[in-house]
Amino acid sequence: MAKSNIGKLFEFMSLMGQLKRVKRTGWVLKHVNEPESVSDHMYRMATLSFLVDPSTGLNKEKCIKLSLVHDMAESIVGDLTPADRIDKSEKQIREEMAMKHISDLVSEDLGKELYSLWEEYEHQTTPEAVFVKDLDKFEMIFQAHEYEQLANKPGSLQEFFDSTKGKFKTPQVQEWVKELEETRAQYHEKDTEGT
Figure 1 (cartoon, one colour):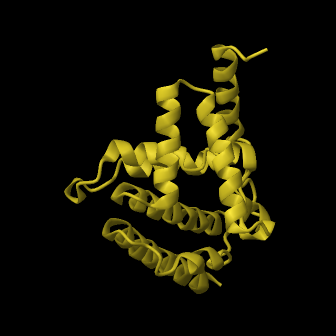
Figure 2 (tube, helix red, strand yellow; figure 1 turned 60 degrees about the vertical axis):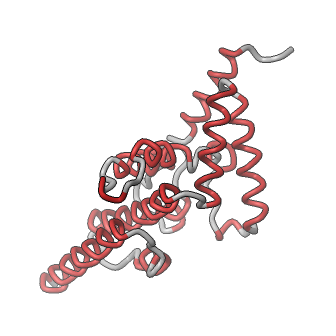
């Protein structure tokens, strides 16, 4: 018997709720106390999208939507990282299947929109997708900086900064990264002076 539309919507809602329970793998592997969820990460990315510089000509609404959709597949496949030893093509196939399933749970128009946004981000086909990819990396290093401060362990998550070095493509986010690096350096200096 086919699922009713309400049944499908409830499954969609449940999957989106699952994102609140999927912990970000990188932080789990580093034994971060109370690691953020995928949902936490996506939420801050969406709020950062509000800060898009109007002079860039980027579509703010599209950036917000891309931020909210880009990791939706993780509600089914989990937060796969290189540590999972799954090659990129396999990861892509799993996430594509997950997004097709998620898109089938909502109206046809909405399903097409969700899938199209996900593809746009995955293939980096628009300036908005490139900006949101930068936000994805920036949010991660900003979170790493916060975790270092909370644990009072300056530099303990350096590998996250190293993994993104030189990979930011948009001037606005490059500026944020530069400021964050300066803030982080000052924080480290204070810590060294205090010991």
